[in-house]
Length: 202
Image 1 (cartoon, rainbow, N blue to C red):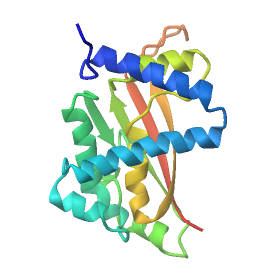
Image 2 (cartoon, rainbow, N blue to C red; image 1 turned 60 degrees about the vertical axis):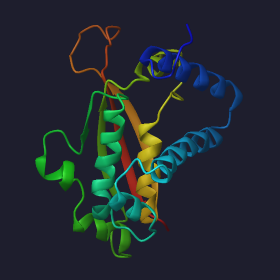
Image 3 (cartoon, one colour; image 1 turned 180 degrees about the horizontal axis):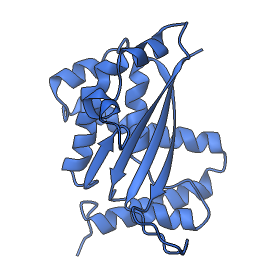
């Protein structure tokens, strides 16, 4: 029987194999970063070109003078797309215990000023949690083998989206186990937690 990437486990294995080969082939960390970001850019461009997003989001993403607050519906729509295609079971946009900095309120006018105004500090942080991502098994396996270069699709896609405000975007991700376990070897995460730093270009 022919396997398909629509099967979660086959998709996970395929991601593991792809990143494993890439890690052996690409030794330069800057080139690795470029490789991952190119995947995110292509995914976002495919969503736009194939009209997987609403006309309003597509119009915004085709502009170069967006504000962070303008892009909030686009971010939510992209995350919804990952969820509706069963890449993840759910997600959280913003801080866990702060309703004033989550969802549609994740950015405000002060954040727009930080990015656009020469008088601002010049950077804004954004937190995103992805629960039960389909590539989790492969990512944990590669991490367990001593590499942080693991399969990732959400991070680079959102980075490409945030770059539509003309900003420089960096991000880190961590795996989170919702249950405290005394033995550190008993690690069973179900969440990939991202921290994005969106900074004004100098």
